[in-house]
Image 1: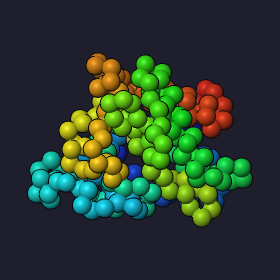
Image 2 (image 1 turned 120 degrees about the vertical axis):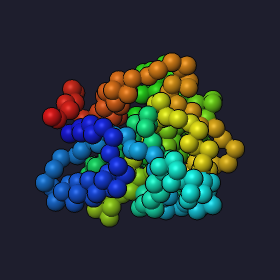
Image 3 (image 1 turned 180 degrees about the vertical axis):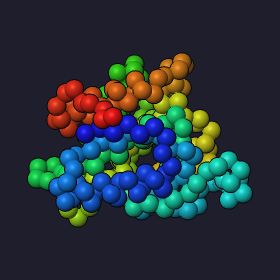
Image 4 (image 1 turned 90 degrees about the vertical axis):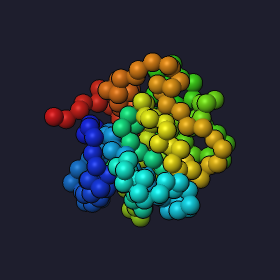
Length: 216
C-alpha cells in the first residue's frame, strides 16, 4: 500500500511510523510505503556528531528549522520542502533479513528514479546514498526492529533549496557537495511525477505488483 501524504511535520511523521510499525508487527496492516515532504528539520541519527550541526539555535529559530535526535542509522541530515521523503514500513521476514541488501535495494530505487528523469546517478564505495558527479542526490538512513520491521528510509532532493545543506555536515562527509534533480537538469521538476516514478521503481525492485494505487 502506498500513502502520499503531502507536507507532514517531522514529529507527526515519527508518530505515524511508530503506529504503522506496531500495526505491521501485529499483522494488522500490509507493507506500506509513505511518501511525503517535511518542513525544515535537521535530524541526528545514531552515529551523528552534534558538531556537524553548523547553525546556532537563534538562527534555527529564525529560519524555522526544528532539530530531532532519531533512532535511525547514520549521521546528521536535513529535510525540507522540495525533497521527496520515503518511509517504507516493511516486514523483511522471512527472506529479506539482510540490512545491507535492504539499503542497496533502496539505493537501486533512487538510481532508477534519477535515471527516469535523465539524471545519471550511482553509489559510492563505502558510503550510503546516491550520488551524481555534482554531489549527493539522496540520503538513506533506516531502522529495522528486532522483528525485522523497517522504518525511516530515504530522502531524494527534487527541488530542495540546497543552501540549507550549508548548515550541516551531511552524514558526516566533509568537502562533498549536495545536488538535486532540478539542479542537475536546470529546469523545474514535478514532485508528483517523481513520486510516481518512485512508486513504480519501488514496486519493481521489491517485487510488488503493478499498478500501485494511491489510497484516497
